[in-house]
Image (cartoon, rainbow, N blue to C red):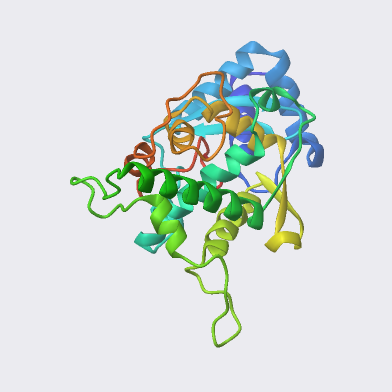
Length: 274
């Protein structure tokens, strides 16, 4: 192929990676480009350079999800929590739900390297896990008379455990709808965003909605496992961090990390995070 044809192919591969619902198994063209990336180092370099031009990074190329892209702080393809959650008060709890989903889906480091690993996460499971942790933290702080007020320089962020426990898990309005403010709604919103971009797949309505993880989600979380967002989740103590590094536990760390301006972990799509 000519250099111009190589560039066109590489740009097409990036475009397919950014499109919803595209996968090598469903596209002969995409499968061909994946093979080119795996067997032609020069072509792979062109793909990386084109992604770099969009302020994206190539995390991995895999036969199932294809080209997996991550964001940089400069990219216009990143989606912030503020974009997804208009209600300011909901944003820290929404991000906590996203991080809890990641930690529950991949509780062990080896799970992140296993191509056959698929797990299921439900709205009920995520909510119960975070509530259990929140009660444990609140009890521990009560015993030690620790200061649970928000940091002076962040008056808008109260302790996440207190904010989460203050909300009902579920309920109904007069119109027989689930209120947006209940924590089940926040967790369901987080899982729905992941499902819309191929990171998880809904398998049933059991436990308020049960979802199976995908290879694409595993690759994203593996790339982010040592990053600040999942490190702060481990600091909060929601679950063991799926990383090869041990994090130091500190209940207050997550309050400063879960900012409404954070983007979801490692993806140009509103998963992400994530």
